[in-house]
Image (cartoon, rainbow, N blue to C red; front, side, top):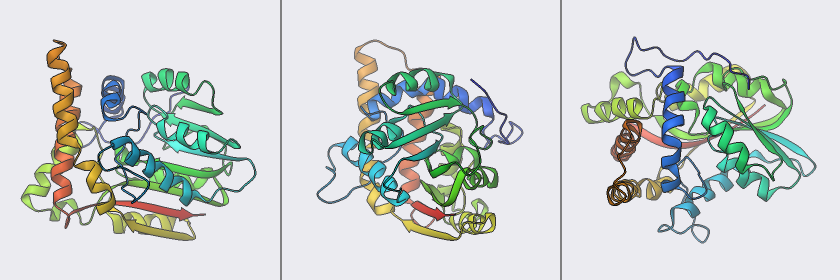
Length: 294
């Protein structure tokens, strides 16, 4: 598989994530997500009355998949969607099972996710490539839709990642991003928010979270004709509250199996805890769904 260099952070700033940090994180921690989601959805959820059960995490995680899919407004005929930072392809499988006329291409830096994710996609019209979402080999103007679900934060919601989404889309296509964002510049965060943010980025190998107003302006400058910003923080909050129970369950499972917890798993667990703490600082952090049309 082709691997493309990415303009991510370097170790000169310990808050920035290097390309190798991200690869190591997902190679080592992906298996942990089976405890978070039996469908291997590597993101938080969306609570929708009548459609998701607040006590059953995967119903909320798949509801976020559904919310993102609906915002793509795909044509009724055959269509193609790119998933930038697709993980194990959980969202891809959800989309493909829902729409038999759909084809999908996912990209990830992790060779483990490529190998295992493609096994899970064996009976679906989708493929995962080991590439960088800031510079893929996918043809320009070839996608009806592009998504980035809690993945573009690894590049700090950079101009490069957003520009790549624009490049891939056909005229009239839609780019949907679901992720956590800052509401203000990192330098203006309160002490508690700043501490949580630093540890969140370190544990999950994030280059940082984009500031929502700046990301909106960035999308418009790139050339998107319409940009819709939805704050869905309260919709995702219930799934975030599952974090301490998931952490406790994961640790107990390993304890009774006498299985040591890998260093990257500890980082993953700690980052999940700091994600919960960050969510409590609602003046500084928010969870958004962005819909941008070309």
